[in-house]
Image 1: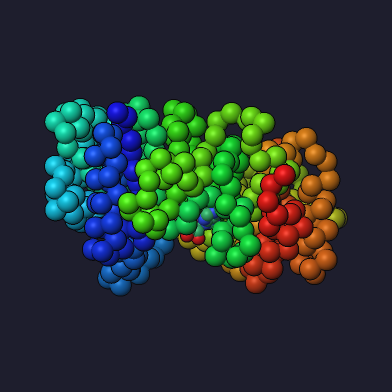
Image 2 (image 1 turned 90 degrees about the vertical axis):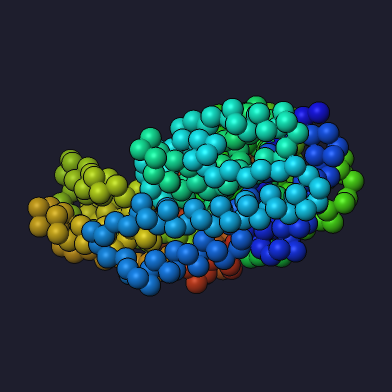
Length: 422
Ligand code: ADP
Ligand code: ASP
Ligand code: MG
């Protein structure tokens, strides 16, 4: 008998019919003798619907902060789906109980809309499990020290599930979703994408941070920190498939590199359309410039991703960086008000129609020429690279958004990701 955590995403919980299927699957696992904790997302579309209502009432304006109330609002999606799942489990003849984050005490900091889990008090859950119940705990939400409801950022139910699995030292955390595992790239963009049977933790971390939303990055970080065995698999298989077969399906995130792992130089391609580029033009090329510009951005709590400073000409240079699109207007306003005048920069220009495409693979550590091959492939497609950023196991480029799919497909083919691993 093992303690297992299942997480079901929004599409998997998308209708009463699907919730019934989830209940039947969970009941199968419980009847096989496992102690089951289940973490559902809100029914698909519900979080967007709720946040959309708030936007109607208060279109976002610089300086406005409704974040506490947004969390109060968005968290209800998971509360509803958790209760529905517990009811469906009971209807299947199981003993089941659902809890909101504050009841279990998923403690977070107070960063509304992007809170981080600090601790989980699992006493109540353990007592229920020991009493033979299936325990359903809301994804996505927690509670801060002051008793406010918080949420963990979009896609945060993955993190709830992994954090609960870590706190309870679960045998495995299974992330059930609408694809049957982690693919070489998003199968919605490249139909020839292949499912990986295993992916290393480091690669998964890069892919998640570079935009593959199949797992929220913090869930991967948690899994790494607490060595939680993590698997991504489909909730759309028939609920009554053989449990052993199900337990081996999907993609396993592995922590050790062993010879069985797929040894491709590039394992996956990630992309994201969430960023915008800002260029500060004609800044004096002297010490302290990067600090002056990015310090102001950091003070406003805006995260910066790719940074590039051009060669100086006549003592002046251009300085470009990317921020999240949601922060774009705020960052431009701030630079215009505070940085342009004091720095004597000529102007600020921005571009919100960019995307970042990245190749990821631990094999890049030991192979040269991978980045240059990427650049060649893009040039053959006539795609202009605006920015480049590299680390040991990834190379990212910023390009015009309209070429994103073309770039992903061309790179996928060029790095043989459509071919079965050797
Ligand atoms: P859930 O609601 O179950 O949390 P998400 O929509 O958050 O599901 O994540 C699953 C989606 O992630 C898939 O439908 C797929 O389009 C997308 N995705 C992006 N990159 C990948 C990838 N490399 N492998 C698999 N799916 C990916
Ligand atoms: N319901 C939340 C969202 O849509 C959390 C999640 O699904 O993981 O982002
Ligand atoms: Mg998700």
